[in-house]
Image 1: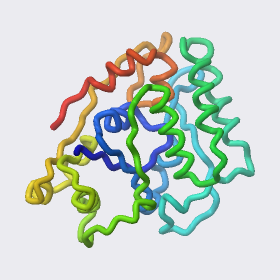
Image 2 (image 1 turned 45 degrees about the horizontal axis):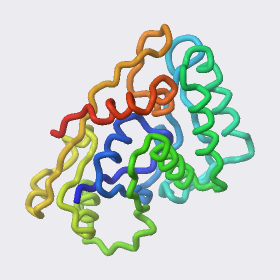
Image 3 (image 1 turned 180 degrees about the vertical axis):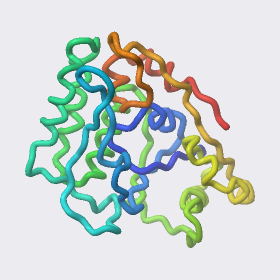
Image 4 (image 1 turned 90 degrees about the vertical axis):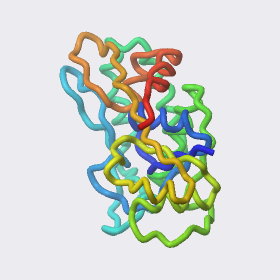
Length: 235
C-alpha cells in the first residue's frame, strides 16, 4: 500500500494532487503546529495585469503553538466573496473560468469555521471534479496508536508502520529532510514524487509556474490536467 501524508493546504499546487492521484491512501496530517506564511491559509493566483497575488483566509487570533486542526477562520469579513472577486479578471482570458468559479463556490459551501475542514473539503471537491480517487482520512480522527516520535521525519514513518504501508511518497522538498535508512530498515520504501513543470498558456502573459490548482483548472480541461498529474518521476 502506497501512502501519502500531507498537511491540509489551501487550494494547493498541482504536485499535491499528483501525490493524491498516485497514493492508495491519503492522510490529511492536521496535528502539526500552524506556521504563519505557509500554504495552510493562502496560495497564489495571477494578478489582473502582471505577476501573482495571494488569496488568503483570514484567521481568528490563536495561541502561538496552536495546531492546524484548531485554527478558526475569521468570518467577520466575507473572505470567500473577496477571493471570488480576486479571480474575476480571469474571465477575460481563461477558457474554463465559469466551471472553475462554480467549483470554488462548491468548495466554499461547507458550513464550518475550521480552516482544516475548509481545506480538506475543498481538496476533496477538487478531486471529484478532476476525477481523482481520494481514499483519504484525517489523522486526528484516526485514533492511531503510533510509536513515540523522536525526530520530525518519524511522523510519517510511524504512521506508515501503524497502518501497514509498504511505500511512502513525499514531495521532492523532503529529500534532505528524511532519513531513508529509517524507512528501509522497517521495510518501507520511501520515494519522492517530482512533477515536471506543467507549461500552459496563461493568456498572453509570461508563464508563472506552481500557482494554485485554481490557475491550472482555469486554463486546462480535465484530460490535459491528468496528463500533467501523470508527468512525474519518482526519486
